[in-house]
Image 1 (cartoon, rainbow, N blue to C red):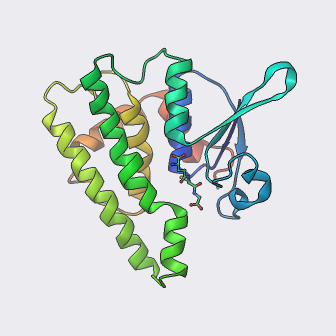
Image 2: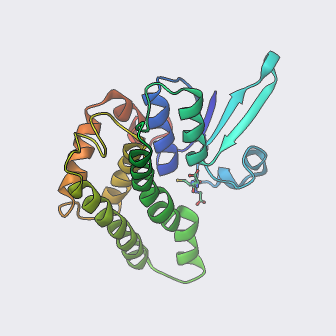
Amino acid sequence: MKLYNFFRSGTSHRLRIALNLKGLQTEYVPVDLRTEQHLKAEFKTLNPQGLVPALALPGAAGQPGPVLIQSPAIIEWLEERHPTPALLPADPEARAHVRALAAIVGCDIHPINNRRILEYLRKQLGCDEAAVNAWCATWISAGLEAYEALLAADKTRGRYSFGETPTVADVYLIPQVESARRFKVDLAPYPNIVAVDQACAELEAFRRAAPLQQPDAQ
Ligand SMILES: N[C@@H](CCC(=O)N[C@@H](CS)C(=O)NCC(=O)O)C(=O)O
């Protein structure tokens, strides 16, 4: 499998964590967002949306296989194709809870702080860096505040966002915490999130997926 990704991309980071937790190896193919390689025709033949990550699967008899896009879809595919270790709990209500935690990050924080949105703020709306950072901090904080409240309310929670083993909630949360630090969001109001981040940092799967561990990190 070829993983088209960028070291500092949160969606790439979440997919790297999920792949590592499943014990799967991939060939790392860097797509540099800083030089807009993702917008070039070559990459758009893989993902017409021009966004990372993309996961190219091997085909039969040396032929190219399908290219999977959209990290939530790829992570669901991983869970279906490689069910062990499970990244979702068995109980349907618990699954809905874990998916909701992941969606706070995946649907409500990340999309509005994505590079192309920030570029629009800068170039079309004339925002300076202070305004862009304030935008990011506002929406990251709003999402983390809700995530923290859900962690605090879960009296049976273990070391991670749900239970005693990592789930897709952690897969989504940890890259968002990384990004929060980059945008200098104060994490002090989120002690449960900080504790989950520390628990995940003890796991090799999370450590190996970190942005600065990637071959294109500079
Ligand atoms: N919903 C997509 C979002 C992918 C996405 O936004 N990727 C970002 C990097 S984290 C990207 O390629 N951004 C390029 C840009 O905004 O120009 C997914 O989860 O895969």
